[in-house]
Length: 251
Image 1: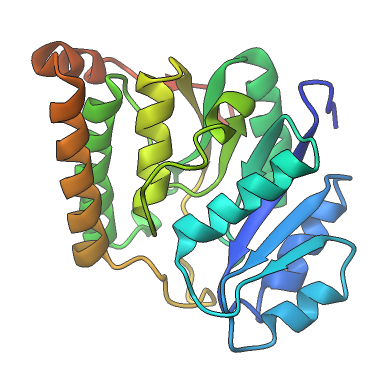
Image 2: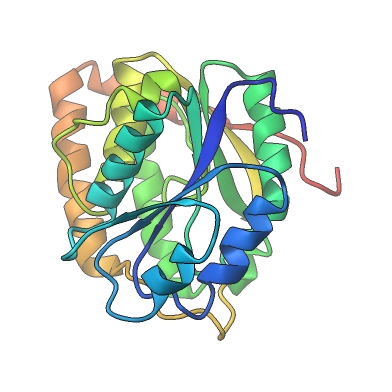
């Protein structure tokens, strides 16, 4: 895999992923990518499993939420001198096999966040989750003043300019929305999407994302950002453009 695009690593935040974490991490290591795992206070065997693998393991004694796990991972990646990170979840819904296409898109679109957007096999998404994601995509794209195809995907490439936003005052799942918005508005980064499959099979553990609670939090934050940046109508019009999407694996 061509890694000339930047010195980068894979960040995997996780919480109680003992069923999948070994296979997820090993599949990434098989690509030759360095890995940082952030365990957010698991009370199962997740940290013990990860400790047997050749990765950097960061552990939280208590649960602090996905936002703080990502923040911790960003800081460690910067400390180790990485120029970019690629994030993915530890439950198996994101595949290492999608990483080369995301890295290739990052090389093709420097100065962009690259999102592994769940645009394939969308019929697998539960209807409630699909509606919640659609609402989030609409609002966050508006706050970004540019279209984002899947604002809730956790598989993303963050260049250095985005990592510099590590201290944004946002927690839990709001942090991922905050990064997209601030990177778009304050760092002038673009967003490009790489189509990946929607995976909601029964073998995955229940999501830590709670549509009503977390979409409410994300929506409140997003409305505040729309008002903060102003030019509301112009931002909305820009957000209604077609998102930049790289070709799917089938062309």
